[in-house]
Length: 288
Ligand SMILES: Cc1ncc(C[n+]2csc(CCOP(=O)(O)OP(=O)(O)O)c2C)c(N)n1
Ligand SMILES: [Mg+2]
Image (cartoon, rainbow, N blue to C red; front, side, top):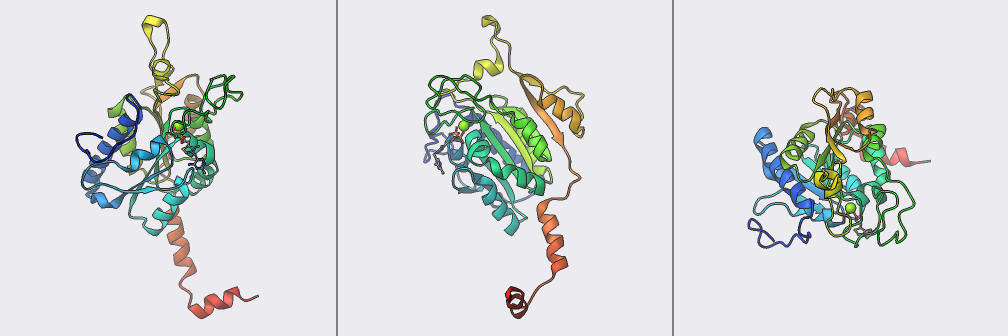
């Protein structure tokens, strides 16, 4: 519940990083509407299941359409929407478990297709909604409700995986840095192709990583998060890989390739080539 939307209870815990992501997504959407002169109804938020899934309920009054699908299937739903209505701005809001656990198999194919959608992945390194089981981004040794003696696997590196799979716009952000996140999300929306903004969005209840990410000088804790250097060329994929595989978590724009054709364009070209078939021709094509 908040001042702008007293009807809806967001069901996020105090201090949850997702509040910051919501603010950035709201602001990026508002700016996108101004820049593109599109109506708010031309925007769709597709959410997965999890605390992050609450993102479908964004603004009070006129707001993007929201599609709250099933766990791990934001990408197939987003693909369905984008292929039937390529004119819409489709934004995915998913958790680390949703996008990189149960839904992981969809990332590679959509990156290869360069599906023209934006995925905002809210990474809290845990399955927050179901009360704290480990996720693919939980660090080795962390005690969670599903790993009571410590997690046995190392955390995956989502940034290098996205690059390997061919995501054509990749940014990394922190939920407390709303201004940076807003511009990274806005640029992702404007990008022609599959864009991912991977956000560190800590869970105060089950995996509070604020101090780890931001550091604490008094306690001698160095921050894990660091900024992508100003001189980084986001079109240089090797440099992007070097950044993605460095120690800690880089923040900023890692990679951007706006030259690849998008999937909707590609399919429109093929449809034109194939031409329309009559019902009789279609029936004939099924005959053995
Ligand atoms: C098919 C299916 N399996 C399991 C669940 C239970 N479930 C709901 S949310 C969730 C994990 C969510 O984790 P994440 O995507 O990281 O989101 P968070 O809550 O941390 O934002 C699970 C396992 C489900 N709803 N559907
Ligand atoms: Mg999570």
